Length: 257
Image 1 (cartoon, rainbow, N blue to C red):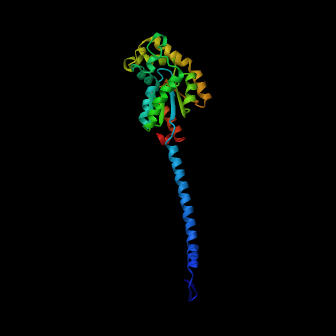
Image 2 (cartoon, one colour):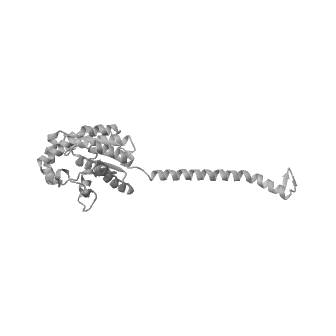
């Protein structure tokens, strides 16, 4: 029934339906628009969470010849930044090499010694498998200690892994390095730390390869920041921590540490 002023005029059934439809149609249009918007937002949210679940690891390299203090400074950084996962290339290599039948133990030995001669791609594979397993456990920020060691390592890394976000290079004179390695022989658990000729060979190789290594890192956008590692441990720590604090304030590293 339609009301005109004070008079009511009876409406046919069709007219009543038309009147009802006239009121309902805008409401239906609003509902359709709202439903489409909800679906759009839901799809966007789903894409967001899917992207978040595929986060790549954030990589930091800490490099230098034997005796430069990589392990010491890595442990100090880990204590100050609990979000870091410290991964020593040398320790990982020795651990896997000691497992009977492991693929690492099958590599030939260097100069007839006990250390396996592992090629660059295999070295990256070893690190990648460890990092991938950690990422699944939520370990997203990695401090890689002692790798890469050569230009070949850099090329292999960049072919299979994300570029390091930051690289530290601990620089130290040859004689100080040799004395440090010999001095840690009793506590390091490494027999080659006590043999002068082997220490000289390792330190010399590390220094000789450093220029090519640093050039290769720079070529692939991973230029290293050098720190004078000849200073005492606390002073080196102060410098390293200051650098880390600076880079963490300037990137998403702060959110992960």
